[in-house]
Length: 515
Image (cartoon, rainbow, N blue to C red; front, top):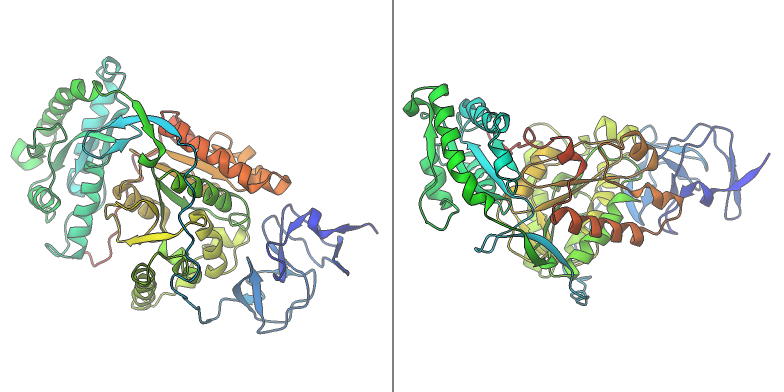
């Protein structure tokens, strides 16, 4: 029987790893050679799943990326499939070694540029939207009706420089503690969209009796209309206007008055340091940490070298790999902010009887991810290799230049909502299973981790990182992603934009009880 080199069909990421990851489906009975050893696969190994390279005894650490991803729950023989049936997460100590491996600032390369909107107040947009922002779920339909009325008319055709009118709606805004944690976090999130660099103007729409009063939002978040007048934004409430129909009519009139001014704005040449990149991975698989995420990490490094900002979120998907980020922190204080968030998540999940290792999801596991440690090690690859300069709370404005961690849940829409509220003006979203995420007003670039997915969902995927499994260097794909970021920031439409995705995905994080 033919014996092939395992390196031709699987990837061993570090010499010390005791597993390799299948770069394509491998049939049962196939024989492979790895160094001086030869073994037969006792069962089929799906794409993205792990193969034991040597005997792993019960209780022994399973290693990938040169790091612990779990522990063998039974003896595992060479060539065996390594997954949830024979690996458990377990608990192990992490050495945070604050700042020990903090890299120096990358050398500044030749400046790169893109065409964007200079708002004149320190905000730099990649899109030019008008937002209709609902303060509460009770006004969500009304807000949506306003945007739909505008789109159904011929009005937008008269203003070609306006990307659209987007309704920012959600399921909250009431039944929460007044001025409490959820109230202020929702205010911060809504304000982040109102102040977003891709939003040229906005109106607020409420019911009138909700806990999340517009005046609380305006006064606590310092909201003004973004036209240089320093005036408070227009607020419409259904109860004061006299019902839905009258509110919609008033909203359509208000947006119509904003359109000419918004249309006057033109793209201008901006340096790449004006880009704030939001990163996320969703519907991940075993190749996410091998192809798309490391390639995005390269793009992140290229942007940081230009003086830009890259945001890494999903704190529960940093869990178990946080020690690699604390070592890159610019100060102990920054590293300890991340550890404090990790400890908070242990407490938060514990009070509900949950455990963080409940993530990976069933789809992640089907794609080859076994434990949260494995998922996290692959996920943080999106953050590249530069220094960690700050850790911020959910939806807090991101002002630092460089790599920043934002504390967000792992759930994609909630995570990206916070990151966009923080000021990300372009997004890159990696997926191995096939997420179709978009989030207006920020364009979302989709990167597939494997070629079968890219080809199967070609209408939704922007870039194929699966070519890395065929031998294309990860650095080359990272450069490709960076160039796509510049192109999309300059106005190129992403697949999610062409599909009209992004208005339903606004999902603020609610951390407390619904009263």
